[in-house]
Image 1 (cartoon, rainbow, N blue to C red):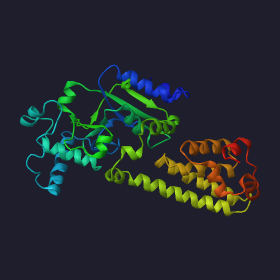
Image 2: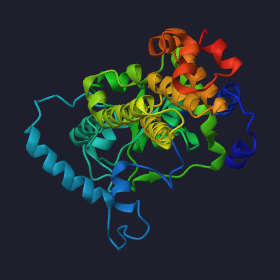
Image 3: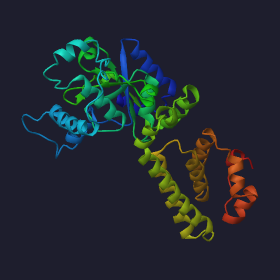
Length: 356
């Protein structure tokens, strides 16, 4: 299945995606990476810092990302001092630790203790030349679906070869909670990126992202809380949570204005439309924010956009929101009070969903 096929087939299901990944995985020994959209390359954060923009990327003979990584490591070492003796003795770098440490490859220009520093930097969200992969395709699916709900995600399958084990795969000696939860391994590609065949990429259509996240949470206990299961993970994602929360309250502010505006006034409609804009931005940042979907559904009801109202209220219901309790908290008199305050009669299917 290729990217065109996914876009052209709006009937793909969760099982279709999972079965495709499982089928491909049977053909070899794979590690997986999930990305929320199609990036130009499968690359490290350090690579993207220097080559993300076609117009301004670094382009001169002799430039080497490994030298940049070396300079960054030298600065990092000043912040941690000399490591205790023996701290890195058990570091595993593929299957050839002894050869790697005693006779490092010329292209690697990095030693074992520095690799451990790199994995620490990666854990804390630093910019490195490492690329995160996981041994669990379900976790890769989570990363492909979390965030950027309007974009198709993708899962990259990478065959583990003997050469890769020897030269590129890094397993930290002291993995943190989040590294364990994500079943992470790190790749250290000298040039900052890797190439894979299009046949080794499975695309997840944007319309399946939210249902897939729900499936992963209910069936496999895979969610933001379990994947980022430490404070460091929260800090890295704090900006996302903060932005989602901020947009939620902006949306609520405009919804409140609409609630207090006169019936059928332009101000009322404009307020609800503005609320929908902010709620939608909140979901783009944090797709698991269940309260937003309920509020969105109510705003759509005020605009008499019944299909949109049904869709978002159904999502809220599926995420655990008790719709009758929420609606009667806003309108204790149910649909009669809603009609009295808005002049709008709620259509029949929604009255059932709302428990009226």
